[in-house]
Image 1 (cartoon, helix red, strand yellow):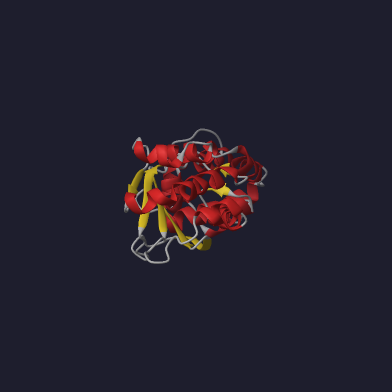
Image 2: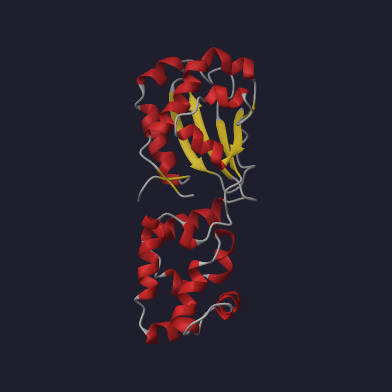
Length: 231
């Protein structure tokens, strides 16, 4: 499974990278010892209007090939279980049933996938795509993904994606739209992003300032994760 951002796999790799970063370990010594140093990264404005066809080729290409290689008999079998939302989408397409099925599915947006997919169709998903779409169904809350980062005294103890944003009560949150998180991963300075309001810090700035080098390493380490962007 590739480390697509944002995903559970990316967060697990990020945790390992932080814990292997001696600069971060030294700069964050004492962080969270006498206060709650946990973070939530709130990644807002996830582009849920993105269609399956518009996802990276590494994800959408194999799925397209799987759909296009279906036999007519298999297409007929699939359509016996098709939900009404998929039938409606197919009615907007041209061609035979097979062509209309492929066009309807690939033109489905991320937000609409739960309405048109079903177990038999899901069997045609490549493993990476199936996993990522499942995560989006679980973790998207009104276009936002909440990534929890448990930081304590130079170590990252846990990372997870929250199904329920209220499940944890962290001391800090960094909030911003998906494009600005991509900027951070591509080298933007985390503190400059906060001060310029590209990202918003929810928590005590005076607590973070003595740990500005550690905060910078949080951002720099994220940028060094060998990742690929889902959007």
